[in-house]
Image (tube, rainbow, N blue to C red; front, top):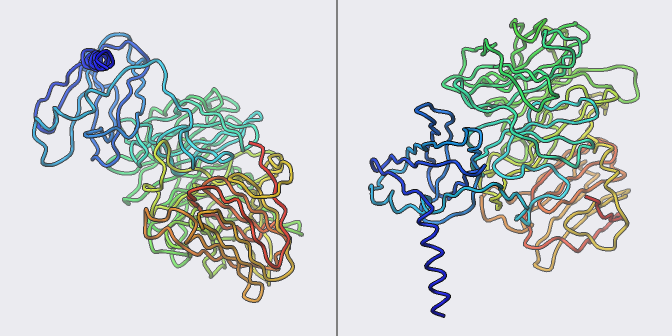
Length: 564
């Protein structure tokens, strides 16, 4: 026993000796000197703390700055700071601690100083039981809007709003993942990082096939929001297929006269033979044109008198889609905003025409692409093969995204969906069909559902589908053909305690009889599609154990395992 205590004492003394004590300059200011020995400095996070600002200083020059919730009394998890990029010498971390009421002695006692350590690796092994198996997630940290998605040379590239220094929204950076099949994603290095113009908010990428920008055929151009004191639009180019970007020397390329001015979506308009760009501006979308991606001309605005206006508009997209059963095409404008039917965030859309200068629509009702609680910031891939229009969404809701019960990471993307337009009773609607790549995941038929499965339901009349577990937790789905609705009730789905708006029954309108459903279950989510693409409803769930029981009435269900 004495030997064990002696060993523990020597161990902790070793940690104390190896750690360099902070210099406490005031109750809100400290410095820490680091001799760079390994690749990473592992920083301890406590999510209940306020943000501190950290500056990395090398030879008197600031190299990086970010915010982090430094651990004061306990460590929830660690995040890595790559210090190898600053050379092999020494550096200074300058901390501004933003918590009122602390004394200098309180700061000296913060556990972070004794927990900060160097290491050559950062362990990203999954430690979350709610991490999806076949949806895209970041390896660690916070994620929201998908950004800059494009396809090139057989690879889909997905960028995303990312916080590398914690699992709460902060330090917006473009994270990056790549995939050959839209399902299995490889984590790539961060693509675009904050600079003097601000953090890096949402935006888009295009493949400049014809070299209109002068950066080379096939160069990738990224248009994104620089979020500083004002929100402006900036440009960067990549000549290595989107792995690294060089920011345009004359940024910003577009400025505005409104506070909420962001999320530029750029695309090549083949009809008009110009580039078009659409940022969100308050509660409208502005339209710009360009010949070279660098100089932009304002054309028009869309939004006044149309759609949902309970909050700012965000994350626009504009593209042409085929109309089922006809040889014609129509334009669709996507607008993400709050005020969705299920409450909080959602994706509305408008169908109309566009001539490169102005978007017009005769649509009067507000239409939503998905009627669940957890489908937001939907945008589509540029340059997708076979003319496909493939969409991804952020699978969460701003009402509770920061408090869902995960910590290693927060948020996933929806499954990929192919979009088109269909007509019903003389009106046009967005068709949403699970992308064909998901069929490759379908495994053997199984007797009982599991935490990762696909359920195919054939029905002819009103039906109910109940997923449950031994804890009495359940998700109840109901098809009501008389009222032309489909609903998903997650009020008793598991842990709903973290936010009052999470328990919910979500209801989708059904346009035409449903003959078959495809239900995708993936640990913390349930996505339901009409197999003909006329209804989609996406919801998060957090059961204490997987749903392993299925009861259906008025229909027949086949359960498949998922190969992931």
